[in-house]
Length: 153
Image 1 (cartoon, rainbow, N blue to C red):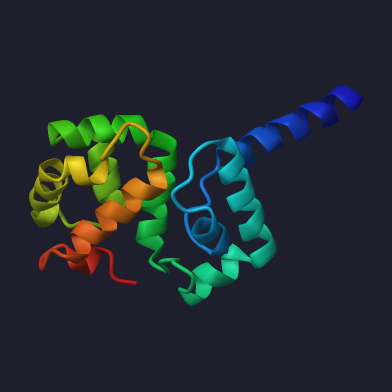
Image 2 (image 1 turned 90 degrees about the horizontal axis):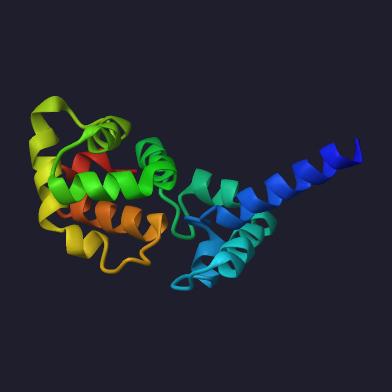
């Protein structure tokens, strides 16, 4: 039983360590810092400051769009694969991102094109976090007349 509890605690701690705070007070306080410690502290700060409230009310940098939250989760799970697909302009992970955002089939080519053309803005360096990439993608889509409707809160 002790081994089970210890294993559960270690798995839970490792999940928390790798989790990106995304938005909320924790993300704002620890913004721009990378590594396990800032991510753990950001997630902990969000837990104390109630990230759920921030997301529900759309405050403290949280986007209330369910589609954007789905894309963020997908980016956390498949970040490197999505980055590779964005660089190529096609692929099943990029398709999954378009589906998670609810992008109509008629607009997907424009979606793929804007991401591919702005790859260096989305991923300015190899240390870009999934949260930073999501914010860059949302900003790009917000600035596009056709695609902005998919990230509107």
